[in-house]
Image (cartoon, rainbow, N blue to C red; front, side):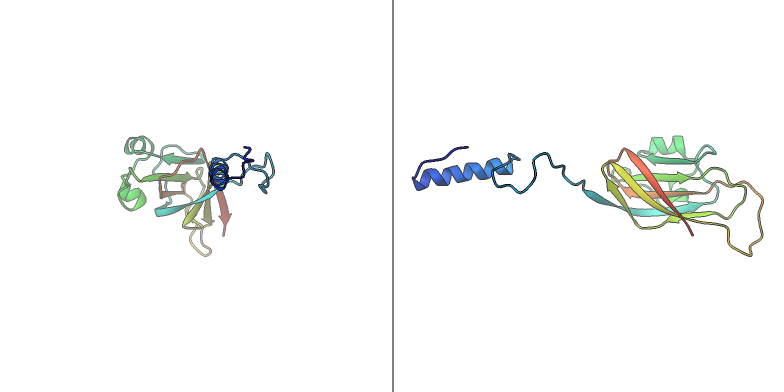
Length: 170
């Protein structure tokens, strides 16, 4: 944009145009950002509204699995237990989603999964879910039954294309 007139009114109008062009994302001379520089991805916090740990997962299958359940219909296709039993309360489907992290079948009971934080991180389309895994307690009687520990959590609706579990054994 070129404004070489000396009149105050025209100069003020040129200044307004330059300001609006800059606000629209057009780079102006003197901008400190480097050309072609990438913007830093924003990190959003996604709060856990409720969660429950299960020794025998109410989800179909026996393999290691991470799922996001978006509707009551999908819930019925995925889980064998009602909402209140699996998560502790009814799911508000218009505002919430359900996350399920299930381990593969384990040779003993007593492994417990729980959230490592009440806040999950959403960055660049990936939801980072920190989970603590507690082994069976010492001194307890060993139980030789098959179990499939899982963690089921309610979160506020957000958009992601992948869920990453960050597991920590304590």
